[in-house]
Image 1 (cartoon, rainbow, N blue to C red):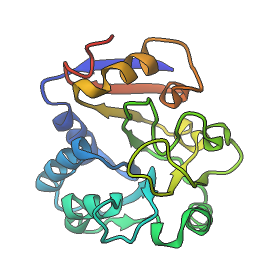
Image 2 (cartoon, rainbow, N blue to C red):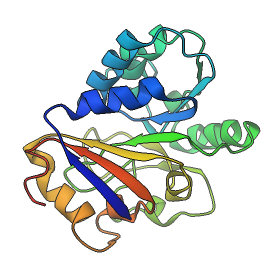
Image 3 (cartoon, one colour):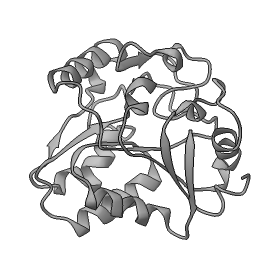
Image 4 (spheres, helix red, strand yellow):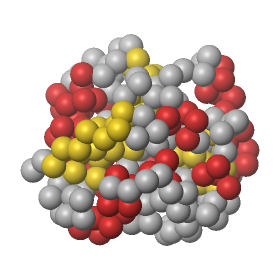
Length: 218
């Protein structure tokens, strides 16, 4: 991976600017830092015509559940993004049927290359719902798979894009904040690719937006 690491006072603001400028197929993720970026993007752009929103991963819960990535993104951005098309991962279908459903949706859209994909990283260096030691990390043939047992809380099954789709994206952006992510950031971006740190397997020219706390191990 080729990294463009940026240590910023407000990385969420930088991510918001990228979303506001975006067009085509944009793939978004869950988490508290992205939520702040989504809220700012929604306040700066009213017409999102020409944008398709996709998701990196989802917990297998109903869309109104507190753990739903869709619920967060919808409240922060999607419900305010007039003109956009939203491709929701249907977590309520379960990790097997939900993954098959999203795979069909992705294929029916002619397997789009994402113009922008926004990624996070967990303290264990997972990205999307690609956890260390899970078979999903090694999947390269299918665009979407289910994860029955995630590597960290909340311990509900997941649906996730695979690395083949992530790595094919035109613009790859990591948004990471907090001291609890510093070790994972170092593992992902300061060393060689390692299956025990799935984020290090993202292969492409990636922009990494960090605050000082998350960058402490670099």
